[in-house]
Picture (cartoon, rainbow, N blue to C red):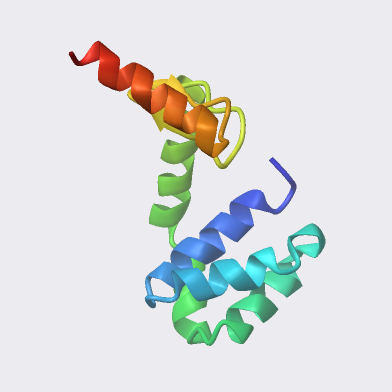
Amino acid sequence: MHKFAEKASLAALAGARQNKYQEITRALMSDFQNLSDESIKKQAETAGLDMTKFNAAYNDPALKKQIDEDKQLGMSINVRGVPAMFLNGRVVKDRSIQGLSNMIDEELKKGK
């Protein structure tokens, strides 16, 4: 995880509370290599968030807890990075259309 991954996640969840998850995520991803405390706040403003509500949500311990629980779940199922994809509990290693199609066909054959 990069230095500001958790803070960016907090910002995304705080934005979701204002139904602006996609807007804040797009804003954060537009310059993810230069994230800082200041840039996260600036991107929240750019995304059109009410900053008083954003700051309250961003500092809400419940969001931090949600992120910690998600990280624990990821570790318990061996997620090594994001995005991660699973099909019937198996890690999708080949994310190409053909690779995914092959995995789906394998799973369908198991069901017969």
